[in-house]
Image 1 (cartoon, rainbow, N blue to C red):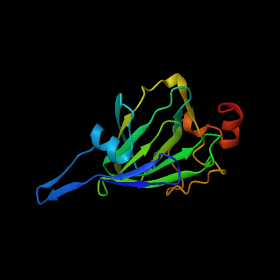
Image 2 (spheres, rainbow, N blue to C red):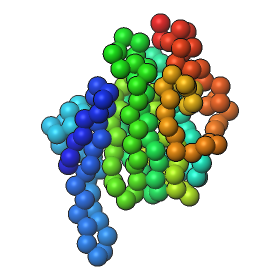
Image 3 (cartoon, helix red, strand yellow):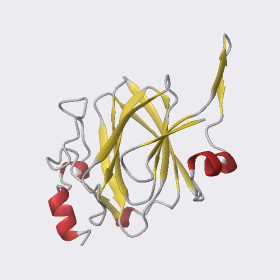
Length: 182
């Protein structure tokens, strides 16, 4: 396993070892001891999620306000551009993001510690996106950051994303920090 540090504290790109031959491949997608020792991920996972989306869908940027979730995310089919945004007003990297392509070809995972906003856009015809979470999802606790916030300026690789109703109305970073994060 190869672990790549990013500009955001604790956010890591993980490249699992893949064993392949003419029959296909095998990879270990999670082992508590290995991920603790090699990637520093020492939080228990309590919920696994699987979503399927089609090309042009953008989901995010989401976070839990009072019960933040750490997420270990990956793709089992297709490709996404995956993003973590620092929304902590006390952080020196507040407003910065990490973006990485995750696909069934590159086998990469992204570790997003609790407290970051997270989202992705679908690059392939269909994507199966899986993620392990360190806390349970609570719909009443969900918050969001505008996907197109000019202060963050994520260069999404799609021009006209398909968004949910809630993802269309989330505030920009200034609005978020002025209301929910102060």
